[in-house]
Amino acid sequence: MRLLLAALIAAALLPGCSALRAGYENADTLLRWRLTSYLDVHDEQSDRLDAAIGSFLSWHRARALPQYARICEDGAARLERGLSREDLVWGYDSLVAQSRESLRAAAEKIAPLLDGLDEPQIRHLESRFAEDNRKFAREYLSGSDEKRRERRLERNIERMEDWVGRLSDEQLERVRQYSESALLFDGHRDRERKRLQAEFLAVVRAHEAQKRLPELAANWDRGRDAEYRTANAALLKDYYAMVLDIDRTLSPEQRAQAVRRLRSYAEDFSALSR
Image 1 (cartoon, rainbow, N blue to C red):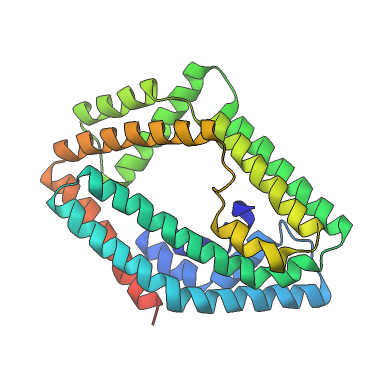
Image 2: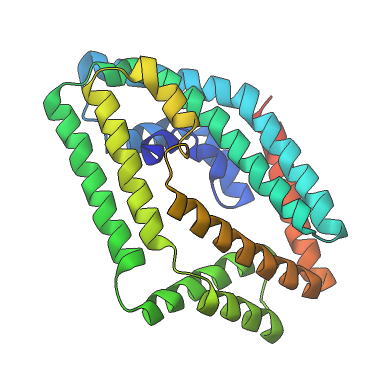
């Protein structure tokens, strides 16, 4: 469910500052391409999809982008002076809050169209979810635990270096320690994805998207079980500890690179919101 709705906010999450402005200016085309891989719509339904995308993007430009700009500017100031655990919690909570607001808005815009889907169209959507799940399993669940940890290490290094540049040997070792010791969480993610997909499909099959989907989208985590919540809290604790350790070892050049990137995002979000 969140994957489908998140396609309606993907334009705000494009990597790279130069790509962000260009991508957002063409977001209607991007979102239509992504959504029509899930929604087999034609004729009048296709027109309604275009209208929903346009309405959402107008809302997103006016309401969400200024908030993204504020978060990036505030985050840059926090990073510039050195991070604390409170800063990381603030960043996580801020992004979750913005995600809830945007997902609710996306659900409200697209719900009337979803309520008009017939059973063959719903089966098409269901088959696309199944394809996504097979891809997720290949990328995150296949192989031994050792291989999965190796892939996680590669992803974490790539993400870190994308922000701060080449990591030092000490920093690489800290990322390696995290990747080797933190619990493997992807099985929980897989079950959570399937739970959300099942809830979403039940709402669509009942033709109750307008009635139920906005609340379900904004509070996607309400149905998580205790095991997931415990594991997620433990993973966040370990990840925060790693980030704080690396923050303490950043060179002035590494810190400046990350701060510049956040401020560039803030500038882009502000410009796009006008």
